[in-house]
Image (cartoon, rainbow over all chains, first blue to last red; front, side, top):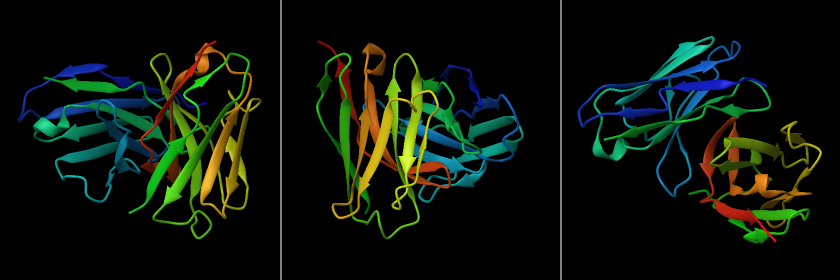
Length: 106
Length: 118
């Protein structure tokens, strides 16, 4: 299985901050990486797929980059609605696997 | 707008079988080229992909659960189901049904909590 490791596990930030979350894969996954946002009591919502492709309807302040084994999710200017937990997921091969999550808090 | 809704018992006895159904509305399982699957989330193990099924009946399962999992589809009802046998407390989790597009998950049900307890 491909192991996905996110850092940090918790991130303290303020509205307007630029936020960066890192995800590392245990082996190369090319650009097959997705990012999800999850709020308490809700299902995850896909933000980005194939490392940098923005899902329809997702604000442009979200962006993704990287390839191979190292990836980042960037929120250019953190908004109140963005306080949530973020997960990466490799979509290179089965079994599909997720990172442990990064909680973005005030 | 596509919607997915999980249903099934909220409590399952240890060594029993967990059975959940996902009802799809706003679209048809059979008239699409997507896989339909299950993901669970527990505090101890985070998000875990369980497996998926294509309308043809072709399946993929997580090797860690493969010996205990069966996913089936009923196209006439636009439903697909999860059976997980020999459950233990470690199977206590929120179970989500999902639509899988190119190995990503673009539609999710709201999730249903299943507790394994006697």
